[in-house]
Image (cartoon, rainbow, N blue to C red):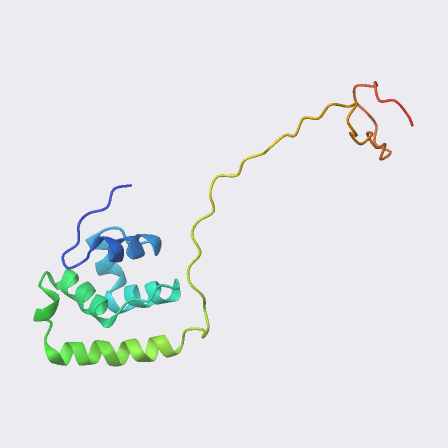
Length: 131
């Protein structure tokens, strides 16, 4: 799924948004600047308050520095309340695990390979030797 470029949002912040399910301006507008910011914090990232202003600016289609001082103050107060509700002591977000691979070890049966164990299961091939 492609993502659109959002005003005021750089590559790192956009990656954080994508990882919290926000990929488009419509997604951001539907979520709201404060809930989107809190999602990013809840995911374990450490955004500054400038990101909160940038998100608000993206929604309003203006530069983040054009957000009126009263609105910034209201956003900060609301953000502090929401952040206080988050669990304390969360660690950094762990990267996604890589692909799982299976390694099969081959050994020469004459070089100390362990004998096959009989665990009481029926061998469907009927060729299992009893020990």
